[in-house]
Image (cartoon, rainbow, N blue to C red; front, side, top):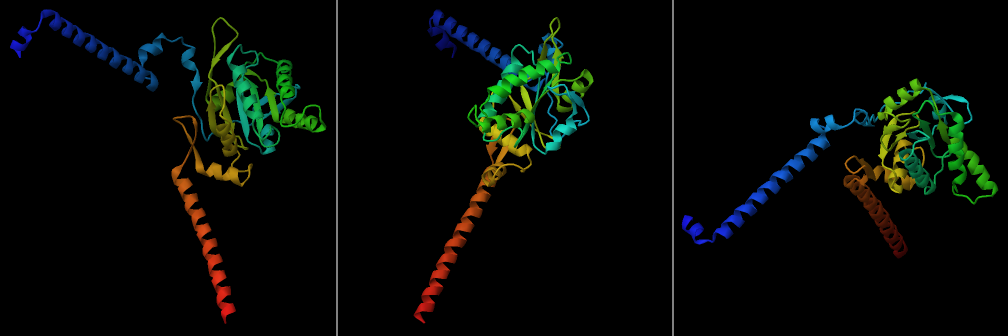
Amino acid sequence: MKYFLHALPKSVILGTLLLFGLAAQASLFAQSSYNRMNSSSTGTNAVNSAQEPAFIQDIGIDEQLGVRIPTGLTFAKANGDSVQLGHLLASGRPVILNPLYYECPVLCGLVIDGIFDAVQNLAWQPGKEFDIISVSIDPTETDTLAARVKKNYIESGSWGSTQGTEQHAATLAQVNEGWLFLTGKQTAIDSLISAVGFGVAPIPGTKDFAHSAAIILLSPDGTITRYLYGLQYNSFDFRTAILKASEGTIGNTVDKLIMYCYQYDPNSNSYAPVAKRIMSLGGLATLIFLGIFLGYYWLRESRKNSLNY
């Protein structure tokens, strides 16, 4: 090997060593980057956490699936009337809970726009198949502000009917009852967001709050069934999450089959088909088809034999 190296020009040897050196550096850099990414994803990167502002470390979502929200909390509706959460759940409909604050400069508006767009694409409507509760996390916001925001969203929707018609007016009244815009005192707000695991932190030097982009699905009795993340909501996931939250009380037979065949995948934050359940339904359908076919064949043969006698 040493004779081979002596036979090579020095420039080639140096170039090769340089390439190996660069490759080693790149490998070390890639490994270091991977370690940083992995540590960040598992929440064990103490250095990065130490560099983050303290208030950033307090936000995020701590999912509380299966937990029932405190129904005795009192908030103010957009018309100024006080109401307990338990009273809002008395309708027996599933609920989309939307923590926000009405004067949020960016994020909250995008989240509620995403809800609005998703609902506009549904055949179901607030106040009929499900309810929406948008609740302010800022105790300084008033019912007057909530009423103004509510009016903008309620009146700008088509809600599945032609504007200006009697049907549209009736639907508006229904949606107005089914989409609540609430404000509350600090104690009630803290109890609610703590129960659902919705992290909120005031941003120092401003009137704003740091928080995540998420909505929470509640069953008719106020039990947390699902979290949906982001600023826009896939129509299928949105519909299926409401259907799941309803515990099968809304939807037709097809909806219930979809609910049976699809299961929430936390890795992709969406609903995915469950092969085993689909195969079970397919096998059942095959048995039913064969039963009908064999029954028809047996009946036809019986009639033929009776005519021959």
